[in-house]
Length: 418
Image (cartoon, rainbow, N blue to C red; front, side, top):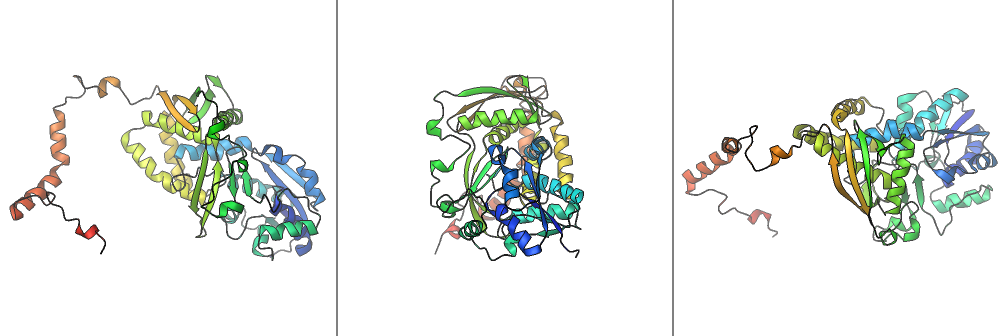
């Protein structure tokens, strides 16, 4: 491999990436350029450049990627209906490919030989970063300090930072590992490592508790065009402004808190607490509109592939032909997902209060119990006979052999424990 003279580090300014800067300089004797993707971390970006340089970086490059993050990663995943293990809306997972995409671009522009990240050797993020780098430029080396150094805990990391005069915000008392972007905020580590421990209220950063939410519901309209949110209460808004508004509405009304134990890609389970106010609202509204606009076969097959889509995103396989192929199907389904959803937010609950679409397949006159020209209720007799034929034949064979259907007195003994 080419000697490492220059490294571009994916830099958040948190504990791990802060101590990586002096570690890289000591270990490799190289120049360290820090790169930060602005995905909506807000005040976390304040003073980041000064901090990076103080810890030994030659410079910090920040790119505002919020709109690209939403339009190219968040919205397609939402349109696919992808949710990992029934609960997780993938807020960290689909942030990694957009960060790494630009990390690679910066490394190429700066003439760097390697990339570096602060992901641990136990987590999913190392896979997401490195698979993306492989897909975009496999010639770049990847340095993962957590797989090389002798630091084994956050306590060790804090001690290293103090010894090297690295300014940090983590303390031994408040030792959560967090990831924040425009879509969500995650919390891991510390007391959360015991799944019996209830998260304390002071841990939450983005959302209010249901007890502190308003006593009156918040009602609003959300408009979609081809599966993409475009307006709130009839006011057209660009993606970032619209999503920020959804976050505000959700945060005030205690929407989007999730506490789950998930199966990591590397094989172990982990416990995470997520705050996803805007994303939770968006998913509920999009799902409601799809219920109007998608026919039965498309919806059921789409639900089937959503599980695979979520698995690909979670496992860091965004830049794969399979994900692109699934997207081609999803985008075709979204051509008719246009309309308006009325929502009520109340103390942690999302209440669907109405939905309409020019492409709605629901017709009140078809669904009524009255007479209609398009459907004769007598048609149901033949339909029932056809779908019930296998059951009918099975029962007739049982009756011919034993005198009664085998379901008259089913045998449940094989379900009992000894």
